[in-house]
Image (tube, rainbow, N blue to C red; front, side):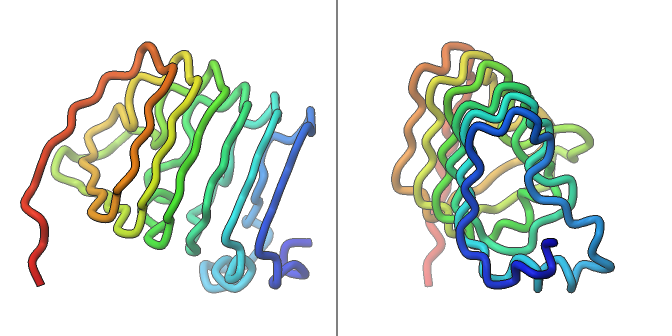
Length: 169
């Protein structure tokens, strides 16, 4: 069905007790088909999905605004391959889950490997009882456009902010 929704700009999934994965791209043949299928998708809102285990198993090639609320079984939101592909992402809001431990799953990353969210301006992490880190693995992250960061009611969250020289040019 995804190939027939190539004009889809907003996806809102709410109160669906049996949804385990929101975006399934495996039915499409190649990465180019993935990009075409999601070419206009700009916003994904998910709310009260107790069985959700994956947002998407494959790499997403288009920018999305995520508003993730009450994802009860999701331990991490994005695999690193998906995080790397979200170069146009501007807003990320994650909240209301007792299961999420990290936003980007950390397995397998090299300490020198960087994931850049070049256009990410706003991050809100709210009411995440078990969130311990943005990413537990060996990745480093850069947020050159970030101007608004909210971390609220995340009692296990540990993070440090590392300042760097702004790019001149």
